[in-house]
Amino acid sequence: MPKISVEIPQELLDDLDYHVGDDGKYVNRSDAIRASIRKNLDIIDEIDARHGRLEDDE
Image (cartoon, rainbow, N blue to C red; front, side):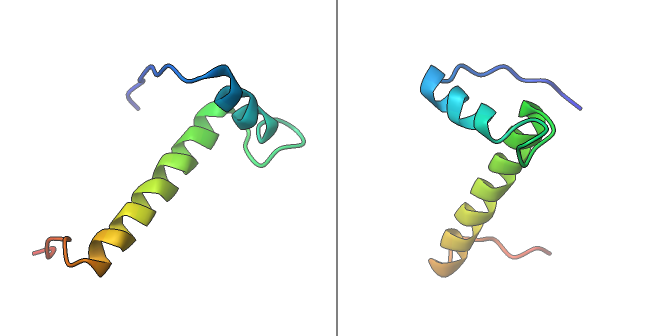
């Protein structure tokens, strides 16, 4: 799996860390970020579909 590097504001990182760990929804930051990216892409696809901007899968 490729690795990437991003810079994010400390406040956003703190919010992310709240959901990571033994008491959180995610095992680690990478899992949380992957889930967030997937969710965001799903939302974008839904919006594009409503506006007829998705290409047909042929």
